[in-house]
Length: 323
Image (tube, rainbow, N blue to C red):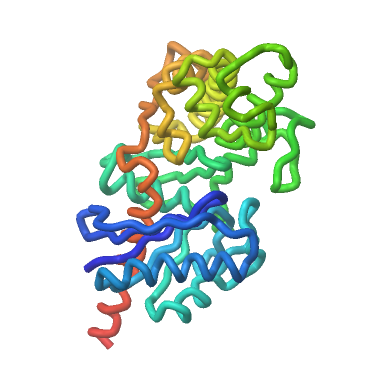
C-alpha cells in the first residue's frame, strides 16, 4: 500500500508518497497561500501531482492547528486560515481518496516513533520547531491528544509574561522566542540596536528588516556573522529552557527536535542541551531525556501522516471485508 502524506505548514505545503516501510518515494511542494480556498486548491494540487505518478490508497494531512477529536475538522490554526473547517471531507471530495487529518507534530511523532529517532521509546516528546512550535506526546507508542484533541500545545506556553505578540492572541509564547519566526525577530531587534555595525546579515538584506528570515539568519550564522550567531544563541537558550519545562512535566525517555529549524541544529543544539541540563529540576540527581534531532528530518510529518492514513485505510478495508 502507498499513501500520500501532506505537511500543511505556515510557509509551505509539502507532500510525499510513502510506502509501508516509511520510505519516501516522491515529493511535491508549493508555497502556503493566505486564503482558505487557495490553500485547499494548493493541497489538492500537490496530491493530484503525485497521483499522476503513483497509485495511492489514502491521504494523510498533517496540519499546524487544532484538529477535532474525530480528525475530520480543523478547529483553529494560528498560522493558517481555517476556523471550524471540515477540511478532511473537503479534500476527500476534491481528490477522490479517503483523507485523515492529524496535527502536524503528532504526525511527525508517529513517523519518528515507527521509523526514526524515537523508535522503541515508551514515553517520547517531539518538538517541531519551524514557523512556530508544535509538539507531540507518545505514551507507549500511542499519541496523547487530551480531552478535546489539542494536547500538548507546548508552543503557546507563556515564557515571557507580556512579551512578544503571538498570532494565537497571547503574548510571550515559547514559539515567539524559539522558532524560525522568532530567530528572524531576534536578529532584527539586534540589528536595530547596532545600526552602524556592518554584518553579513545586514548586507544580504540591504538593511530591510522585512527581508530577514530565519533561514537567512541561519545562513549568516554559518558564515560567522556576529549578529546571527548571537540570535542563534538566544534561540538555543529558549529551546533549552523550554525543554527543561517539558521534561519536568512529562519525564520522557527521548525528546526529538524536528521541523525546518532542526536543519540548523549544529548551530544551536549543543548549547541548548547545556541550558536544558542546567534548568531541569533536580539537575544532577535524575536521568535526563536523550535529545535527538529527527531522523526523518523535515519529512517526519509527511511520513507519519501517510502511516496514519494507511492504518485508517486498512482498518476500513478490514471492516468492509468483515461486513
